[in-house]
Length: 265
Image 1 (cartoon, one colour):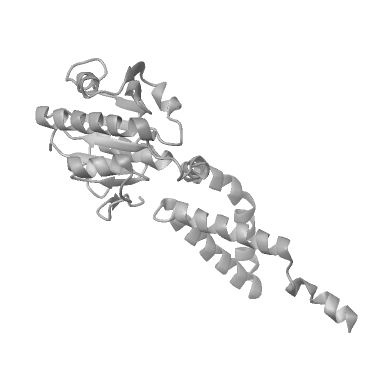
Image 2 (cartoon, rainbow, N blue to C red):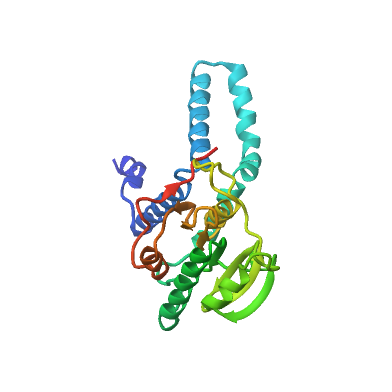
């Protein structure tokens, strides 16, 4: 009787087991949140389907299919690292993100937001295109290094001057760190997905691409349509008015339900 009780001892989890189960559950939940609505989710479903096929082949003793799938699973891990590279990079970058911090410190926040909103309004009136990336928890140094370093306080005059047509830096992105303009003329990564709206230009695709890889908030001013868009977490919110822009920058509201996800290819 004692031996039988020992065999079922695993049914009495200790506090360490409970902690481990909780940690694994949280990690799996966060992983699913990171890959939802992405190409990775579709591939995970494909892998699960192959696993089901392998189990059926093993049960029915289908040697050829079982052997081929066994080799596929054996070397598939290396292939997955290559295929899932964008998603893995994004996931690792977001692991260290903290919801305790906002875009700017409390003392600087209102001043910086006012200057940004004013700059966007001036750009709209002048029908000048622009893309502005605001650094959050994930650093944007690697992208800032592709442009010209500028150590200047954020001001609407400085931003509008940078994006003046035919100026040396008007084609790239402005990167803002805290209350300073860190760089201008920076090159941002384009999204690897095909947006549903084919009218989106390079600036919009770059804004979405950066928001996929980092937690930056990216503002895009379209010179063709004279409209403002905001990219966050791989989603693009269109037709953003000054009041909504202010709310986004101060973190007053969660992501708008009108934000458009970028579908996988």
